[in-house]
Every structure is written in structure tokens, then in C-alpha cells.
Image (cartoon, rainbow, N blue to C red; front, side, top):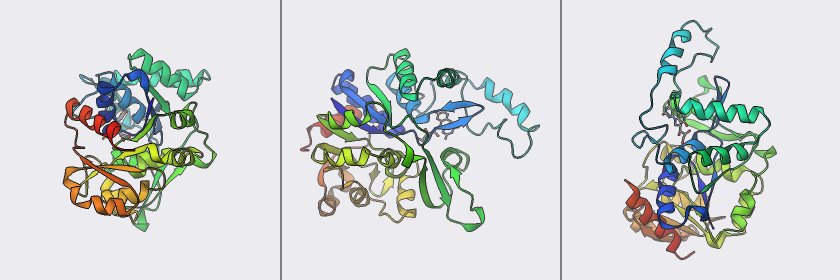
Length: 320
Ligand code: FO1
């Protein structure tokens, strides 16, 4: 079995490549839930849903999230109430776009959680309904929320992840990130076994701070990875000092890390032996090795399924 630590869009593309190369039944993804949010009384799990929709071939590839051919009638209708809502209310908010078909996933998940099912069970039902072959396991069934502190003192109040990422378009400089609830969280069912029992563990090209960070913050996970360090291969989400999507490079820099493959290596070296970097960073292989990780150079930018499959082969072949 291959176990993949996965966040959002980059991980989805990697997994879509991996299941072309090996049987989906042999793949388990441990998925970040630090982005999850309660909105309109519904439990929304963006990374779980992005992976599910991508692996089902139903994701809107251009957006990277949500469903292809989506309509937004419910959101448009909600806008009517937004102006009537009191300023402090989040009841009518529409800055976080929930498509009409996507809403079905949140309605189902929320109802099942209300019936006492846990997130892992519901995720199994949702992925089965979409015909997704590989197993998606939430990093925990407990609530862990990524929260970011803006650097400028005036706007001192912490931001929830989606407020930072979507409402503020991750344009806010942050001085701290924390994963509220992590210390009390227990690894989700199957998480530690998936790490201990894997032939190889792959860290997908996800944001090291807010996608991989929450997974590592769940007690027991970092130790489980360190115990398998020789068999853990990570793909750098940073190419030539920049993130391909999202704020990974900025967050690394704002939190005092080098926004480069070397900065990623320094973060991952304690529990991962190998870092796969893009050819654009071939010249930094020596520095990655000096940071304590074996460096494998290849093509890590995935424009489509073919590159995803090639990257998957590289991560499975690279000398762990
Ligand atoms: N991202 C946006 O930039 N704008 C949105 O309105 C938005 C809505 C949304 C709804 C459901 C969902 O599963 C994901 C959604 N995303 C949206 C993406 C989401 O913020 C990110 O996928 C993750 O949280 C970061 O990987």
C-alpha cells in the first residue's frame, strides 16, 4: 500500500496521477481537515471534497475545486438576505461560494454527522457514492482549525483559514499560524496504520504550512512518520522559489523559513528521507542534501494527467 499525505489542489493532481500508475485499492490518502469550516449550519471539508471530486473526474479543473458545470442559484438567492443580515451575522455570507450540486455533499455530510456518524465513516460513504477507488482518511475525526494571526497589530484578531484564503484572497501578511484543537485531537481511524503499514509514504506537493502542517500537528503522526523516515518521499510544492498555486511561498517566508526547496527540506528532514524537486531546482540539490534529505530531481509541475502519472512513477521509483 502507498500512503499519501494530502492537502488541496496539488495533492489532488498528484493522486489522479498515482491511481493511473498503481491500483487505486492500494492507495490511502491521509487528508488535511484544518481547512474545514461550519457555514450556513453545514460542515464543509474542502480538501476531502477536492480530492473526492478530482478522483471522480468531476472537479472543475480550471478552478481546482468544486464541480464542473456547477450552478450557483442558491448562492445568488442567498445574496438577497445578505443585505438584511446584521453586520455581525455570517448567516447570509456568499464570499465562500457553495455550488448547487456541491451543497448536496455538505447537506449529506452534515446530516450524517448529526446522526452520530464520524467524519471517517461519512467520507467513506461520500467517496463510495462517487466511485472513488482509493481510501481517503481524514487526519482526525476531531475538530482541528487552522487559524492565522495577521502581522499588522491593528487587525489583531485571528483569521479562520477560509477567511484568510478566500475572503482576504490570502493577501494578508501573517505572523503566526496555529492549529486550534490539535493537542487534543486523535489520529483518524486507520491513519497510524496507513503510515506504519505502507510500503512507502508520499508527501504530496501541498502547502507545507497549512496543508501538511495540520496533519503533522495531530499527536502521534510525526512520530509515526519519523519511524518510517527512510520510506518517506516528499514532493516539493515550491519550484524555483515560488508556489505553483496559493500562498505556500509567502507563508514560508512570513514564518521565517526560506521559500525554496531548501526551506522545505529543513522542515521535512526530521521525518522524511527524500525530497523530489523540479529540474528548475537541480542546482540546489547539494543544499537539499546538506539540509539532511536525499534529493531527487525530476519534472514536478503537473499540467495534466500525464505529468501526474510521471511524477507518481518518480516518487515510487526514487531511492527511499
Ligand atoms: N476557493 C475560493 O477561492 N473561493 C471560493 O469561493 C471557494 C469555495 C469553496 C467551496 C467548497 C470547497 O470544497 C472549496 C472551496 N474553495 C474556494 C477552495 C478552498 O478554499 C480550498 O480548496 C482549500 O481550502 C485550500 O486548499
